[in-house]
Length: 417
Image (tube, rainbow, N blue to C red; front, top):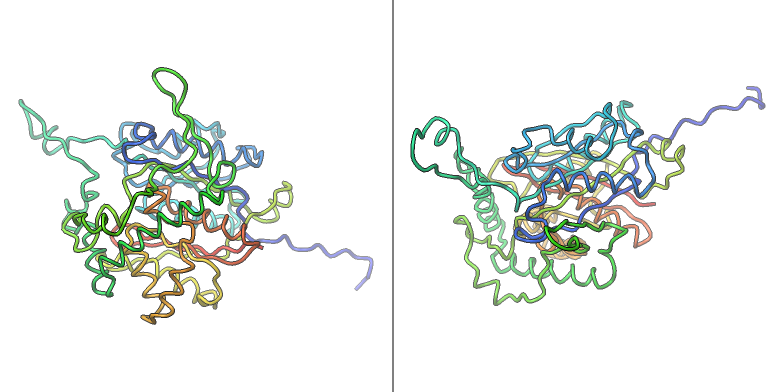
């Protein structure tokens, strides 16, 4: 071979995260209660590209997760398309709305990862938003359009039990509580985990980990009179909690263990991440924040939703020839404390010492019970929370997993170099 011949080096084909941001998460009756999910989605799309001076025209596809269609029903449909246009993306941008319950924005990450790996895209945005406080009461066609000729109309709250009971499924809080007891996860253990979630958030906040310019962006909410309301931190975390106070709370929806204290609220917020082929990041002069090593969906028996994050993690690590010993940090979304604890116990194989050790490196800066759980936004949120903490530690490998209604799940494996 001629020594003067230059052999081209194949482009590096890793999928990397180059920008990640979320709004502060709001309480059900808080600052974002009348801000639509579409408006929240527009905010994060604008912010996530502006942080890296990325021209929206360079984005091949946008995948957008949301899971309470009743909230955006007055805008009819295709929220992803509406959001991209309102955010100033060109008309030829390809977008897709995803509803995979709470998994939706992590599913968006997986779809973007697959599109890049398949050579169908170079740059993708994965996003998600929810505005649970903005969800309207509705009148069903059965009772209104076809059922009432004259008289009052009965309204329904689609947030009640999240609607699962209408088709014969149990409320997810009921399933989670029952499955927790099957695994020996008591109400007291769930309350302790919830209390610790808040404590970890406050410790992280005081250390400057949840600050505008990193994971968070500033949100301005216009007011009818006066200056806009500025939201710069999560609203849900509470300091004045105790196990005694939590023990007095009654379980919800007939669950044996799940209460308003050991579950997140009905929250509002949005999150977005820009991912791209590493060679494209090099071409644009963008520094990768992390590498997406793998993504993994999962599903199981509807009652056993609390186990699905563990299944997704196990399947993903097995395919990669890895074990939990190869993972530095874990994020498992706290849909309920029961979910995180059940999944960790399954991952520990019922080994008490391993179970305890896994708890110590899971949700180290607090989880959804403290931060909030705007369902369509949470999958991307836990991925970026994990990534930023690995960056602070100088690198490492982490796994994030989330469950979704009727026993769906997603997991993602990321590495910070």
